[in-house]
Length: 134
Image (cartoon, rainbow, N blue to C red; front, side, top):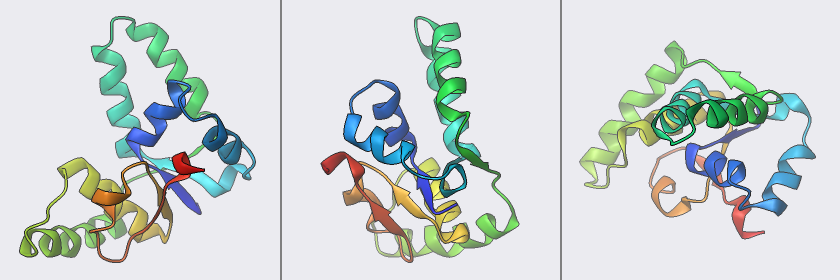
């Protein structure tokens, strides 16, 4: 996986708010782009809370079908500890699930694709890009 999509970026794509970013994503080979299983879990929480959960779940399944799904493994857990500690020591923590996703991307050597560069740029060792500003 070369690019890992974060949850908010996926939500923007699912809502049709990012046509240029969606075209860029679809131009990649299937193995180049994917999501963390944590992102999938967050998307499913959103679907469960929506007014139309079955419709949202179907949209998520279709959206995720061509993407690689990365399991959160021991390497990701190893990356998480030092990242969270560094963010807390600097007094600049980010959300707990965002920290897990960032650590997951770092562990895979993947670039995180996000609309929230401001938050993720604080993560040591993380490469991040904003495809929404194309």
